[in-house]
Amino acid sequence: MCGIVGYVGERRAAPVILDGLRRLEYRGYDSAGLAVLTGGELRVVRRIGHVAALAAAVPPDLDGTTGIGHTRWATHGGVTEANAHPHLDATNRIALAHNGIIENHSVLRARLEEEGVTFRSETDTEVLVHLVRKFYDGDPEAAVRRALELVQGTFGIAVVFLDHPGLIIAARNGSPLVVGKGNGETFLASDPHALSAHTREVVYLEDRDIVKLDARGWTISRLDGGGVSRGVEVLSEEWAEEGRGDFSHHMLKEIHEQPESLARCLRGRVVPDQGTARLGGLDLSPRDIAGIRHITVLGCGTSFHAGLVGAAAMEGLARIPASAEIASEFRYRNPVIGPDDLFFAISQSGETADTLGAVKEVQVKGGKVLGVVNVVGSSIARTCGHGVYVHSGPEIAVASTKAFTSQVAALLVAALSFARTRVLGPHEGKAFGEELLAVPQRVGEWLSAEPASVMTAVELCTQGKYVFFLGRGVSHAVALEGALKLKEVAYVPCMAYPAAEMKHGPIALIDKNTPVVVVVPDDVMRDKTLSTIQEVRARGARMVVIHTAGDTAAAKLADVSIPVPRASTLISPLFSVLPLQLLAYRAGLALGRDIDRPRNLSKSVTVE
Ligand code: F6R
Image: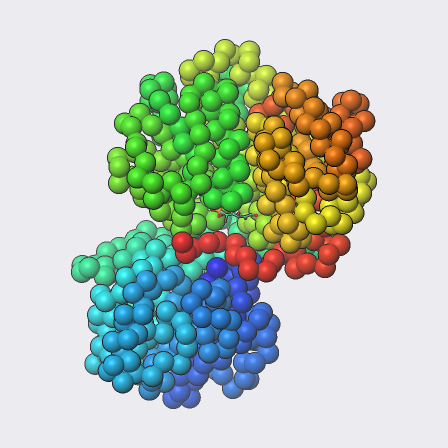
């Protein structure tokens, strides 16, 4: 979603800002802009489309050393140059970029218009720059503070003033911001990834922090009054690299990184000798674990799908009643939270507004919530305080792949440790732990010998009007994930159902040649799913069957058979999702889609 970059120092600001904006491209955006103080003027350049278009439009004489930049993902107002950020006040002496949503913007706009302000965009953001102007009497920080007092909603903002070269004012409430220290230069960004080429030392702002940045550093204080100091965190090495290597797309690279990302997630956590697992970050004693009455796993999109597998593992393996819920629904249904309930919040980015909102709702009600997060130091990780990092490494493609398998693996590790504490004997624990530890290598072997039938499945699935995905139990979660991937990356309409639900209505949509993808590992539900395949086939559907290698009965029912390695039920999603990730990737490629940055999507959904 929207991104912010700021620079103040001795170098030309524009190239630093453009580099930062490029690093934020993976988050999804539709226009970009920057404002740089140059030659006694505040010069703004904005373009719709990619950062490359903005870079091409930046004049060579834009050589000021203080500036801010922005990538916009349209919410209020269409994708136009006028709506792109930064926005200027009426005197062209203040420029402001904003992430988030100003909920009371129409009231504020009407008031400002009555006072004679003319608006130049349709955005909610523009009210902010006019408010800052209204309260500006020579003190930039005081003006920003007074403007923000009137605002309801979420914001991460960066403001520059022509009267104060060498200064950026920034503030956050619900939209992340980090500041980074260089040598005689200071950086600002909405995502630390934007700063990784320049500095590893960053400070994450908290909600309602306001910060004054100059080339020497920064001063943070609270919007509600009082100073504050925040600790410096060091970004890990792996976040600095972002190339595609020999791969044509980040998505394909990330699919192929799964052997390593899974190994990183499992390393040091599974203890096969004792048939258990250790996750220090959970901060739960065996007594705490023994007392858990219910587990709810919260997440959105792909993370929710991983949560479905996690909940099944908590219940199936650890025998703790468990469910997964979509965070955006959970947070507003006034949930009942008991003292012995435990929550997991899953998020790759750690910034998803709905998941963060659900975390806060659990905390307001006195519940304990643990993060299952990829991005270290992100808002969800910090708000939860405890949890598990999944260690997938940076995921640049908008469609999540390696984060999904690592999220599943992390939850399986947690389930193993809970299971050993509560119900599981050492031998069963050892068998499960050993099977988990063998997954990365087996995933690597499967990926390096990708069956040719994946391509045949692509041909089938790109021909129909829509595609059905079916599975039962954890394979239903995989079906949901496969359908989501194909929608996102190839824009093919898809529906996913628990296989047995077909006969309760959706089967009416099956006609001759409808592509149906079925996930049917060799587990207790296999025979029942094979019956569904027969029913659907009898209506003329064309079947893509993802089945356990060697299951000839399942293969015989398929028009396209895709074998995956044998695994126990709870571990099977780590294999059965692989052909679905590749199906989406190869279908997107065949249809000429923008694979790494599908239309309308954003990597980090920081607004509700
Ligand atoms: C799908 C996808 C999204 C995210 C969802 C939650 O490929 O990436 O569905 O899973 O927006 O994002 P995180 O995990 O960052 O909270």
